[in-house]
Length: 468
Image (tube, rainbow, N blue to C red; front, side, top):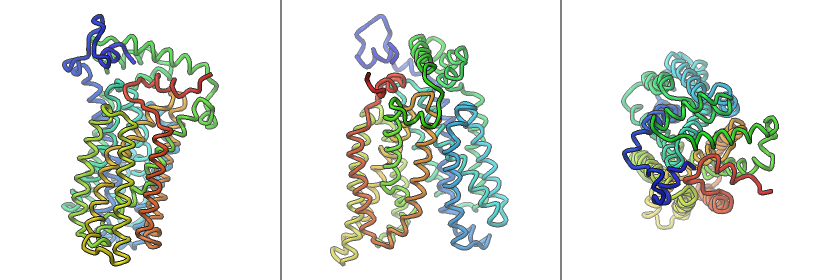
């Protein structure tokens, strides 16, 4: 951690180093601007996720698709995203963080154009696959880029904007989709892609990626741009250089490097968090919320609008709190809320099945869904991505981040695919099962996840290395 940040956290003390006052935040304009450009990728990711819901019936009617054909439209996005997850780390390491974002935005643009011009299922499948591939890559590179350019005191909040813009993208497409045709909706998906593609030309590359790529001069120039012309960057530059020297002493990286004793903690923490993020059942709630509301006997339109607004609002609150409360407390609160929400939904369906408290059960379901969505949005939505961007050393970040992103999309596919079957098996049992997984996630976070608030990336990596 730089001297300025240490003095800020200690409340001053040493007058030789000036405190970082509010006016000094203006020096970080480029950090904020770079973050804003990069989260256009997050917004694009959200639009890809939100497209199928409002466009399903119009596409099926116009292109004469069966339900089985349209199910491919939904699932092929996830397949493309899993392929993107497999390759995203290598792409981001080879082309740089900016290069990966630029490539992804171009691929996503082609995907949306394919959807727009689709006259049958084939071009539609291609478009969804390409937007999925882009989403898989962007879901990794955006939080990594933000984590690498941001001072430690702001890293959690700015990295959380990734999740905020994903849910904004989903919600906006839900809204726009009720007023425009599915082809016009596809064209609007190109807008954030173009902003991202053009915007990356006006922001610096990640200084840490430049350093690990053997470009120390460019690293220092990028850091100077990010921190401001008058900022003292000597401490941060030296920390990065010392860290790069330590990386050069390590053997050549391979997939097996992830399971070395020094990297194993990062893999367990990040992959474990991402697995719990998905297997608590979030995509079952998001994709089938209307069905849950209808089965519970509640107006699905009111429920869906309420939870969409809540998701955006609470995600924004989580972004503001994550650097104040710390990662661990907000994740524990989030997982506990998910447990409560799952239990409320499970009890609602249990009461309905046995005709007990029939007047109360619909309200239990709605309250449960809203508690669940709010709890997920405040911590488990953004938290695993923030932690993933923080815990991996630079030399294995590409491989490790790819593994984490693959787990995210694989979990998304499993939950989305199995949810209907589980609901047919037992509506209440499905959510009691989710509650059990939520309880296990609380134990995992308490036992395994370290607090990374206010620490530099180099300090975090050093703390995870086994003591000799």
